Image (cartoon, rainbow, N blue to C red; front, side):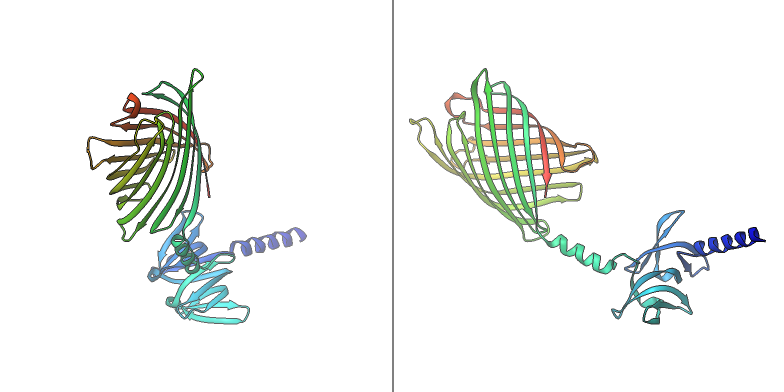
Length: 351
């Protein structure tokens, strides 16, 4: 007798447990067992054990029954919380204040207990997308170089970026140092600021300033000021391509006391590419061409391309393998026109 009572009690308990959750009833008479994840923008998101989360349009739903408490928001803005059942096209919510009935078609939002209102979550996400956000990058290079010299070098780069949906401020700096057989063959310091503002989806304007000192090239001081228009050719999550065209003024003073300081105006043309070609790899490339108005055969051409590979599962550490080229059509002191660097850069990203 005792064993029979225990068996009956266990059966009742199992039935009670099995009755937990929710049932979504459709217009064709079918029923789906599971749990309500949310109701948002006229769609029921229902979690099932056999197909994960499925999406069912509101017009195909005839009823929702849930023994667990859920929250619903009606078109009038009222929010009710508690177990629900549907009868005669009306949703009945049993809350702490009593039972409330509302038309199923008046429900504009719903979420499981302990969750967040999808409408509120969407608004907060949209607001966050309109806010500017600082991100930071620091990197260290080990590289080989041919051109004016053939050896290994080290470099430190850093960048701070403040970016929103319609503008971007970038502050950057770098220091490159190299020795060959104990003799210093490179000592370049560079820093700059670049601001871009988009007045439409594709078009914007930019202004930038850069300072540079390179004792190996004989440059005591070089300043570059540029402004112009920028254009987004492609803007996708995994692929972006931007170009800029403007005017530039460059001033140079030299370490050689016999050389006169020089300033000239010219064009400022550039391209910037980012391509996330795989989950494990991203291509980053930049190209800058600045010819002088006085003589278009006098120009600087800067290029850098690299492939970023994340280290482990962290999104903060990345290894970049790349190449950079700097071509000066009229170098000082009889130096070669082209400098090419190959580097492996360890990058730390944070915000």
